Image 1 (cartoon, rainbow, N blue to C red):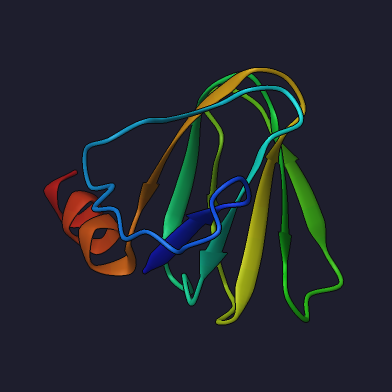
Image 2 (image 1 turned 120 degrees about the vertical axis):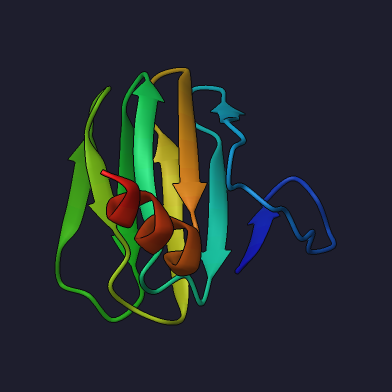
Length: 98
């Protein structure tokens, strides 16, 4: 999975298995080819849109969303927010532990 913060001209690779990403209000990150990855909102609220999907979602603290499509997904903070994003393999491992 590749993440890119719109403020950076280059793409960066992050392993977000146990990391939280903090987004200031109005800031967004782009997720490329994240199908199967699970987004969890830890604080604040975020808007999620996926390429070629007619459905956008708004998530609040404690809510999760599984990205369903390859291509580009955008996650934008409606308020200052903290999120975690598990790639599909890590998300499956966590589900099996429950």
